[in-house]
Amino acid sequence: MDRCEGRFAGRVALVTAAASGVGRGVAMRLAAEGASVTIWDRDGDALSEAAAEAESKGLSLATRSLDMTDGEMIADAVAELAATTGRIDVLVNNIGGSLHTPFRFLEQSDADWQRVMDVNVTACVRTTRAVIPHMVTAGYGRIINMGSKAGRYGSLFAGANYVAAKGAMQALTLQIAQEFGPAGITCNSVCPGAILTPRVRGLLAERQSEEERERVLATIPVRRHGEVEDVAAAIAYLASEEAGFVTGACLDVNGGQGMTI
Image (cartoon, rainbow, N blue to C red):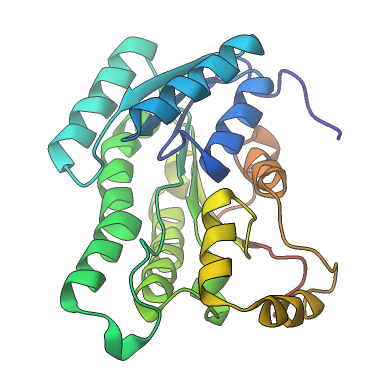
């Protein structure tokens, strides 16, 4: 695959919830292109595995164990990162998920809604609020929010709470782009379809029969589900200097399963 080696040389990137899955793939992609990357996650073992992978590849990757439902921990971690590196150029708000709450709307409790909103929206709001002042000072920034096909077209296996949360992140993207564009900061969202991480494979197996999964696959024009690298490549573009005239955009990465004019 074509890559722009050194495209992020001298840049500092923060990727949240990135010890595994899509976040880890994004972090490795940015680091492979020269960024100094920090990843947050609450899974200490997965963080150690990610650090070992990066070291084996000679990549610059720092890790921090963090509970992103704690606003004070987020603020402290951002302040420490900025003090250590002197800048934060790229923020990838990767944290999210349906958290295995019920699919059916009437089966979802207030607690199910609060948990999903806290992880998918509030954690990203707090991180963005802490990072933006450093970008404003530098006159440069790239913010990429992890949306979802679900937030644009609905979902066959994630419930209304997740769909609403991802829709909220896409709306937030527009406002951040509008407000902070004059400061040299762009903000975009990436909206993947089903990306075959181990977690998603398990969720699909739990909530859809093999026949249902085959029918869904037949609705995807490219006739495959997404892979982590598909999302990592899209985010690497939006995080780059080449994307300086792209802001407030929602980039669908779903193989054509959801299309709009």
